[in-house]
Amino acid sequence: MKIHRFFVQEGLGEKEQISLSNPELLHQMSKVFRFTLGDKVILFDGTGGEKVCEISLLTKKEAEFVVKENREGLASPAQKITMYLSLIKKDNFEWVLQKGTELGVARFVPVISERSEKKDINMERARKIVVEATEQSGWTSVPEIVEPISLLLLIEKFNVSLQNIVAFHTEGMAFKKSLVADKKAIDVLIGPEGGFSDKEITLFKSKNIPIYSLGKQTLRAETAGVAIASLFLL
Image (cartoon, rainbow, N blue to C red; front, side, top):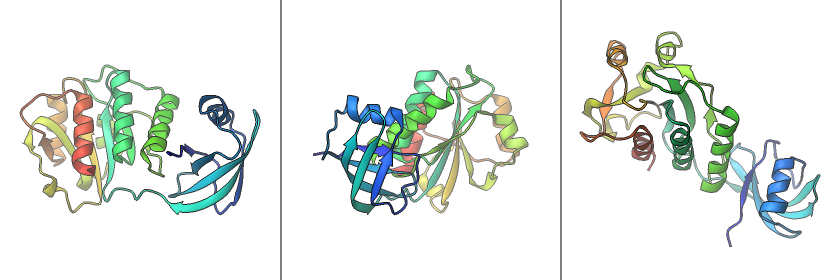
């Protein structure tokens, strides 16, 4: 039987008995999953390992667990992928966060590019999405997600590590994973609906940022995001 996994903010360390009081977590366990004493859950705090625990107390205000097994978590992908994803429609952007997390993306940076229709996101909701996707998928490290940043500011003023950054655009050269197979960390730029503007493409070229294409077909921004993550991580 599947054992449900839960991310907790509190550091678990080497504890053999754990006490938690997060109201949202307690509600989820008691009301959503209807756990009872003796049921098992998996707790992890994002540091790499996870604990198989047995519930010894569950009330509206507190839950206590006895650790039954300490084990290694799912190994992180060989390549650390940071996805610089241009802001797109809310539901589509959140879908990429969810699926990208499931695939193993390590970090998300929402980008405001020239053709972005949206300029901000609900960060609290975004973080909740990546936490839930981490719980579901088996990873033990929750992806980082940061506040949106302008694409021009990102490249020109923050001096992104340009030796690791690649952009995807329909007019780029054909992508082959062998081109970046030697890189342990890769920063991937993905455009919004309508793709990157001519000004942005010119900027990429002036900074010697490689521009790749997934093919001649036109992909929706969210499809491109998940397809690119899959190419790198599966």
